[in-house]
Length: 225
Image (cartoon, rainbow, N blue to C red; front, top):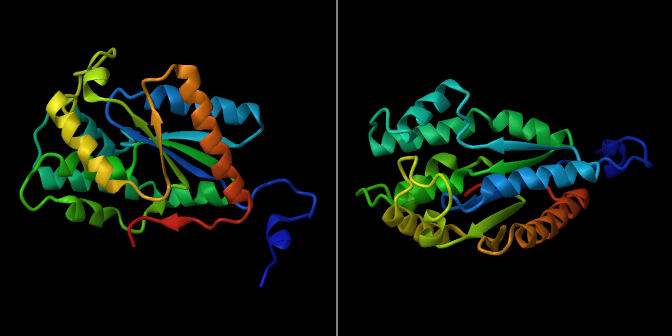
């Protein structure tokens, strides 16, 4: 069996056993894009190999179908579109695991928690949280989930709100309730109504702790097994 030092190469190497998976979640217009991009720049400044991913990945064939749906250009059955979102995450699973294994930290904007929360918030009979979570079981789980908390009323005042299908106040309130039910041990709630700088400071503290845990040998976890 290989020791940790053998797996890492020379004993003087500072490369971590694996990269960290740091996830941003929250309602629409809560600041995920601003904070995720800022965190990647911060990690780069510290010499961390980091990369920003966004879900849905709208560049894939499945992602283009999702994009058309979100922009209101197509209509799709609620169960079917939920499975499309899940498939979009599954088609990136191997690449995600490979990146983490290579020591690259992934900063991810939305993931399976959003998928479950948004579909369950529709209130469609049969599409409860248990059903919504099932397709994403065994996907890689985040080492830290940074939940940017903001009221739907405050989010509605931010620029660009309302341009996509789910950016409606009542929908966002339902999504917020579902997020509360999905919170687990990886979650850290951050008040997104604070100044950008104050949010950045809290985000960096959480990310640094996640990186340290991976350097200490925390293995990759998997969702909802």
